[in-house]
Structure formats: structure tokens, C-alpha cells
Length: 206
Length: 140
Image (cartoon, each protein chain N blue to C red):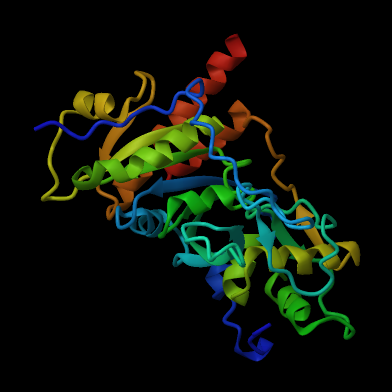
């Protein structure tokens, strides 16, 4: 194992340490196609410079031709950028986003389990890259909202056209945002939280 | 202009039966069943890892790492003098998440670190938790 000597490890800056009172953490996952602005969104609201964690996975025959049946296992490194928002002295929120191929995230053990919910970030120039991930979230029962990252040269569709194109039911919020702006990204997260809250309320009534 | 249309994946619509693969040789997993295999360091006695989430907060119990542990683990202990998530530990150490969970499992067993309020998996978030997060976000 190629491990850096501990002298060379760059640990957190003093201001990046959590207070000793921190007791629990929750997470939100930001999903979407490549280049759609996930890392930008993480970075715009994070109190720390976004960090990267990775996982090495070996899976039988992902996207490779069967090499005459001899060895079909491929190793893939999946990297995720993440950021952090201290909610209170006790509670911390982590935001995970990732470049790369979405199908691998669902192999990442525990990424979606225990997550409060997900934000599906969309670029209307390449709407179709989000189809797969929306289907997978639905199958897994992960609650999500859709955020349209408003690129200047992207086509502007009416929200209801997008809802129809994405085949989303009425209750799933769709909002526009500018992932570069902290306030805008914060509003997307608030939209998700309000949606989760309304789900929790309706469950409590049921 | 009309956007492209997603085709919903109805659970009822089972994918067509895959063509029958040639039976896998004995002792080999069926390649049609994707399987995750983590690359582990050290004592990878499979299945013994603690239930550690990306956002489980880890904090060292002692100020001074005992001498007889791996350098990776002593680096880990130094990093988490104040609480840090497993994701942050993985990032700072440049080690994959699964490797960090193995190292942490041993440190937890040796009571050198404490895992704080690990996320209860599959539990539905309660309203007061959601409200706390909303309140915190509003202050951003």
C-alpha cells in the first residue's frame, strides 16, 4: 500500500476542525451528469474547501468486453467531492457530489442509506444524462428534488415541460438555481428540506 | 422546442430474460451477478468491519497514540483529536473509504477512538432533525 509518511499528511487547517461538541452528522447527496455543476454546488455552500474521498471497487465485467471468459473483473476508483456545513454546535451536514459515472455510486455501500435525500442537478442542454439517475433514485425510494442549473446558453423549458419530460409526479419540487451562488445553492437545499419535512408530516398523519 | 423524454422504468416491466450464460466453472462467481469486492489492507477478515458510515464522526480517546500500532492508524489518531467524519479522514489520509473503515474497526475494538452517534441506517429522519437542519441552513 502506497501510504504517505505521516509527516507529509496535510490534515485539516485549524479552522476546519469540528468543535468537540459535534455529536452527529447527516448527509445529502447531489447527483447529476458529468459537468453539471455538482462540485460547484458543494463548493459554494461548504464551510471547508471541498475534499475528495474515494473508493476502489472491483466488479465483474462492467463495461468491458468479456475477455474470452478469462478475467472479467475490472477495478474502478470512484471519487466523490464533498463539503460540510455546521448546522449547530452538535449537528453537522455533509454534502456529497461526484464526477464520473453515476452507475458506480449505487455500488458505493452506504452512500444513499442514511442520507436525508438527494438533489438531482440538471443541465437542460443534456437533460437525458439525468434520466438514469432519476430512475435509480425512484427504485431505491430516495426522496429527491430537481434543481435546474441555469447555464446562460442552456435552453429554457417551462418547468411543466421539464416535469413531463422527466416524468416526475406533481409533488416533486423542481427549482432553478445558479450553483455558483451560495444563496442559490442554499435555497436548493432548503427546497429539499421542506420537501422532506412535508413527507415526514404526511407520514405522521398516515 | 421539446425536451427529450425520459422513459420511466416501471418495476412491473421486467427486463427481458438475459440469455442463459454458460455455467460458470465451479468456484467462480457467476459474472452476470455483479459483485462488489473491496480491496482491503491488513486484517480483512471479511464481515468484521464495524458499521461505519461516511459521516460517522470519529474522535480519538487518548491524546498520545500508543506506540504499537500501524503508522496509518497513528496518523488517523492524530487527525481525529477533534471530531472528524470518516469521509474527511479518508480525504486527508488519501486512503479509500473501505480501507479507512478497516483501520477504524481495529481502533474502535482497541477503544482508541470513539464513533459518535453513527447514522442509524434505514431509519426515517425525524421532524425535529429536519427542522434543525432547515434552521441551520437559513443562517447561511
